[in-house]
Length: 131
Image (cartoon, rainbow, N blue to C red; front, side, top):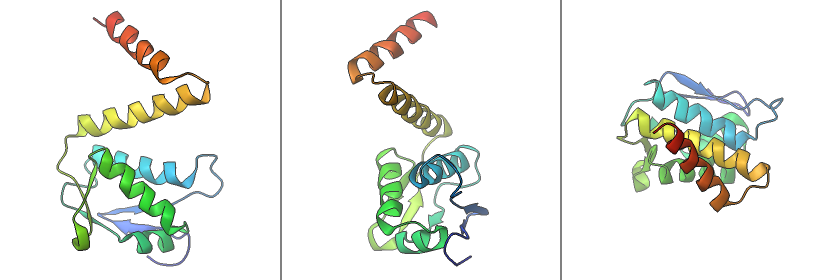
């Protein structure tokens, strides 16, 4: 698919940004990729569009598209293979789901003005309660 904002088809799904959403485009795309890998719609080894192609197809800046890929590479969801491109990494679904949950928790904690140590303490307390 091409055309600004239309979406980018990859592995049987369409990555797209909803301009009406209150969630930033960066988060929308990250969520879509993580969820698609978790559900098995994007399988390990699936090649994602080049950064420029993704940016053009979904109507975002190349910097935003690159940030999505970079963050997901750091989280182990994607892997960059130099000039060969960016691919869905060989990861387990539980790790991807945990990374997304941690990201959501960190976003909420930061929005509430909670610092890292206090947030980590809250997670430790939650684990202790689930013993």
